[in-house]
Image (tube, rainbow, N blue to C red; front, side, top):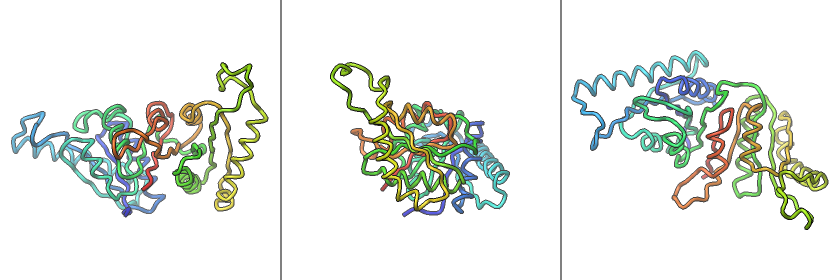
Length: 288
């Protein structure tokens, strides 16, 4: 069961400040409480630093100051936003993953430093995104952008409809349009069997696929009549197309298509590539 809380991780860097501002706007849109979290990167059993009682008290005071600074920043964006702080101790990725149980959304910056160790892709952000128990937003590229459409990839996977619902909700809440991306491999004639599908023009097949997509979107367009919808058809990979669209979008929504051998993995290859290359915030939409 989800609670009315959006959690944002902060370490005081500019990347995390962008995440706090974004999270404040998102919590305000949802009508939820914002929890600003800082993790003191310190293992009780195998400490990187020999903290005495005074040193640890000083580290905690600094952490509380960072978290309170995050709340102050959030209220610059949303003055009446209910907000609280949470200071955690331990491995940052593990503690943040534990924080995701039951919350509506976890928001992360794309890189970090210091006590909130190495909040960068390939490290904490990537691990949390792969194993979180709730949707995760990673604030990348033009993190504070508030113009442009929401973009989403829509395929034939079992969770595609739920991801599309999230994308429509996000577009409606922002008062913007929705770019729906469908990628597919066209049927090529025998003499083009060795050619790259990306480089081959197949206008008739593309139009058929576009019409099929619009047919699938018809019930959603009826449910969200105020959300303009643009359908984009491509032979390229979903990650490549969504990365390209991210340069003019304010948000990309990706479903949980992980098929790895690690239990609980959220992140598929498309989501992973977007976390490295998108030019706007990305929501990794987890479905129960």
